[in-house]
Image 1: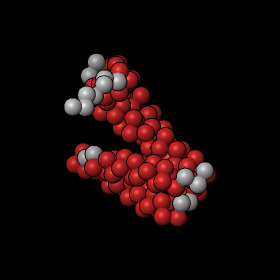
Image 2 (image 1 turned 180 degrees about the vertical axis):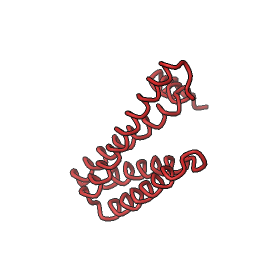
Image 3 (image 1 turned 120 degrees about the horizontal axis):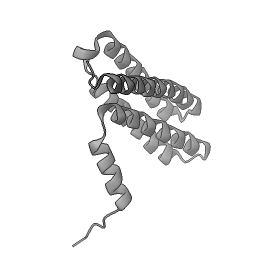
Length: 137
């Protein structure tokens, strides 16, 4: 019988994800997408199209997760706009994967980096407001 060995790093990562606040999870998704995009671009540069495909698909999975987690009831128009942006990014990722086009991945990277920074800033503002009032209204 195959026995799985405990990997302390993997255990720590799993616990970090399971105990993270929703804003932190969102930021972690963006960070993962950006990392996989860099890896996909590097793989294209090396003409390692299997790795490029695998990394691109990971980014697509993350963008799909971002779409799934949108709350249209609370987010209203912002949520609808984000969904449109995410759908566009998915289309571009598929195109980049088919054509093995680094330039398209760079475009997606720029958009995700901008969203990542905006969400990080928003999370910091919310945390500071919560800290001042003791509760978030």
